[in-house]
Amino acid sequence: MNKFYKTVIISDVHLGTKDSKTKELVSFLKSIKCENIILNGDIIDAWQLKKNGKWKKKHTVFFKYIMKVLEKENINVIYIRGNHDDFLDEIMPFSFGNFSIVKDYIYESFGKRYYVCHGDVFDSITKNLKWLAKLGDIGYSLLLWINRYYNVYRKKRNLPYYSLSQTIKLKVKKAVSFISDYEDQLCKVASMKNCEGIICGHIHQPANKIINNTHYLNSGDWVESLTALVENYDGKWDVIYYDVWSIGADKISNVEEFDLEELINYNFSEQVLI
Image 1 (cartoon, rainbow, N blue to C red):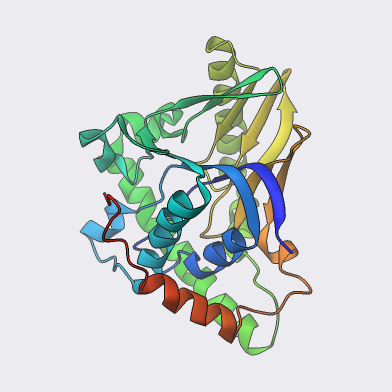
Image 2 (image 1 turned 180 degrees about the horizontal axis):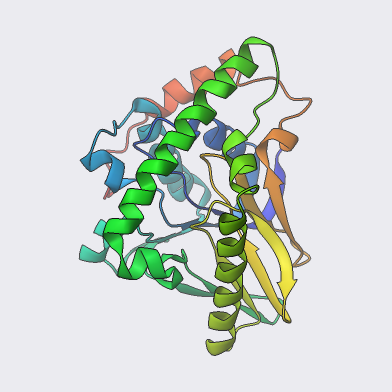
């Protein structure tokens, strides 16, 4: 049975990379119903695609699924650009029907205003020192490589997915300090925008907490954490962890594989694709 939410927010899918957990993401999205989907940046990883990244069939499946729900379920989809998909700067703001591409967004919920942005423009390294950010991206890719093969080892032993890279990051004092500074900075930005909350991504660190009277929400990622933010119909926000959500459910089944093939062959000839 599908779970119903008012809004679902995902970010940092990094389509075009080996570590993008697209199959799990589509499986999650198929299990829920909602009115709004916010794609909060770094959905496509243009940085990696320019280097040695590879666009796979499963990456196309994700966008075909989004287009399918746009057409059949009349869901509002808002795509916010991130630093890895900053090529969207060339076309935004863009709007067609229920689909839009924007730099940022004000989301109103039960009388509260939330400033929604990817968050990279408030990261001093990403904003001012792009060469250093890309150098750090190389080190991060190595960390993900370790994570990938560690989980191959776990899968062979029928163990659930575990983010070794997240564990390593949280044991590095500078990384923990960076995350804390980032959260504080984003909460200040929310106050400047006359908002009671901030919804962001970028640092691959899911969160739902109050910082200095500001509601800080981070949707995490679909590379390491495999998380999404969901707003319930009573206004309550939750972080959904895929590994917890999928406990007790079958692994992506043959029936689901058939559905994915159906998506691949779905006729979008009458749709406007970007």
